[in-house]
Image (tube, helix red, strand yellow):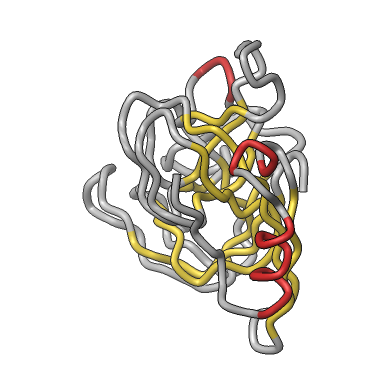
Length: 183
């Protein structure tokens, strides 16, 4: 498997050169610093979803998977909603290992906001969570008509304001701060 670098700074390149095989990266963490975007953390995790995932899509840990215990992510589903891992840092095919951003700023995460209540518009500092089968972060406040989700140890915070959408499946790429369950 070809190695993909997350970022192009020397520290990231040296880290991956020090690892002799892709197998040794599995489950490992990496921290990056960028003067414009701050500190970001990543983990090298296995995509157990049955389809490819694009960069920015939210993923949750699949604790029940014993093949790579603690290192498996999948699309948010009813059984794993409280195990938010982070967002894909790169596009990855089904059944492959890839970097998942578990902590820090990300400027382009698909976010969804739907509702007709007066406070339906998304504002900066909204807590974002995950919803069963949805490839986007969703507003996680139960006081609106928008989607709600249970989340505990991990979440994201929207850093920009966005208008609500007239359909429940429309998304907008938003700047968010990611805080995964295991940074």
